Length: 286
Image 1 (cartoon, rainbow, N blue to C red):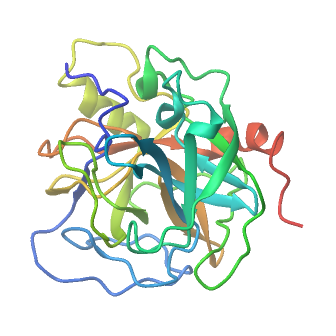
Image 2 (image 1 turned 90 degrees about the horizontal axis):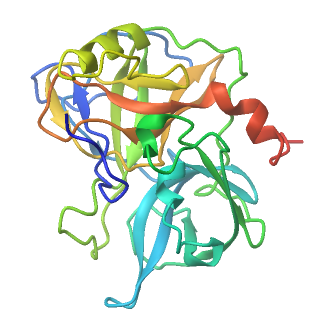
Image 3 (image 1 turned 180 degrees about the horizontal axis):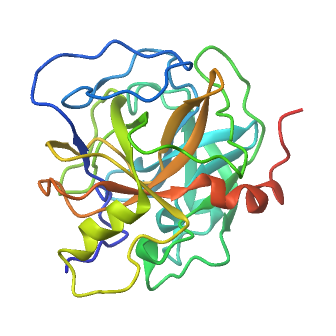
């Protein structure tokens, strides 16, 4: 079966229900489980997802800090992203930078230096995202100043159970490595996706695999459904759901079979599984 590689920044495809062409009205954080939804990704309005960040690596040929992965601001000085985004050995902390508060990629960049990369100790370099524990923390050189465009995403309690079919939102600038370099200012995309239970998700992946073991690990979470595909999610970016009237980040875009396969939900790192590990480094909001 096809194995994802860390270079495939389009790792996640998002399959969306329905075949109509309507653009959804935006649900407030109080919205609960609902059926239906949009066909594909669409432009995110200013200030709707203020925790979204762009993780950058330097491209010598282009002399540009190039978009590598998504991430989320969980503290004034810490970004949550996928471990596979940081796994190349020559990417020490100084090899990554972060852009906060940006809607259009590369539009008036003001990059922040990353001073520390903390990968989860159970992340396996050779298995990459499919091995699980695909979570990493990036410490920023200086705390960022919060504003209307720059905000923190709340983390859920470790005990939170996200119900199947609950509609949640994933954001990103789309795939950026299929021989296409995103050089122009490109608008952040948002997509609504239904949560898929781990057992159902595991069955779908096993059906097309020779692997009879557990493909979808307990520290993973699936979202997306049969129907039209969309490839807007960036690895490392946030999946957020409404919970008790606020947004909480429940997933980190991790992996999935490539775009065009309609039967495979996208696979995310399950944030609830990593709360205690995150809190070893990142203090809760005061």
